[in-house]
Length: 132
Image (cartoon, rainbow, N blue to C red; front, side):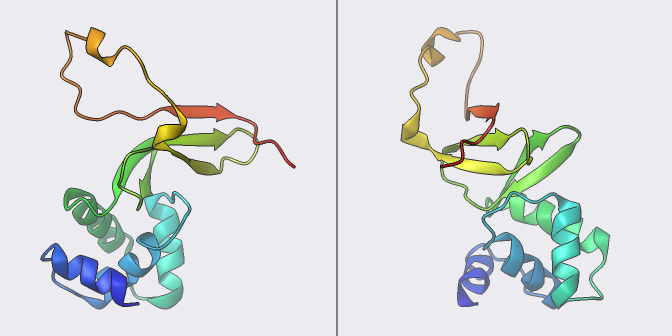
């Protein structure tokens, strides 16, 4: 997997086997995993990785802009490797988080928030995914 390696190098991140294992999972997954879920998955390919290493690596990746840390589930952060602007839909039945294209929604009135300096926003929708 050359893409995770090149992305880490572009950010000046020192490569270790543990960081690479975290990158290979979190930068390529389409789910929005918690740190615990990342740790569980990464241990499959790197059984000696510690929970602290995974948490610290995710914090490093978020600080470098490789992932976004989002509070999408009550009491837990999830990590999103899709860092370009987009929205989310959370299925109430399954808890699955779906990405929604940025231009699928129109948000009006941001200019009316004169008391705030908005630097980022997203819409989080909750409901039930329709089955076709």
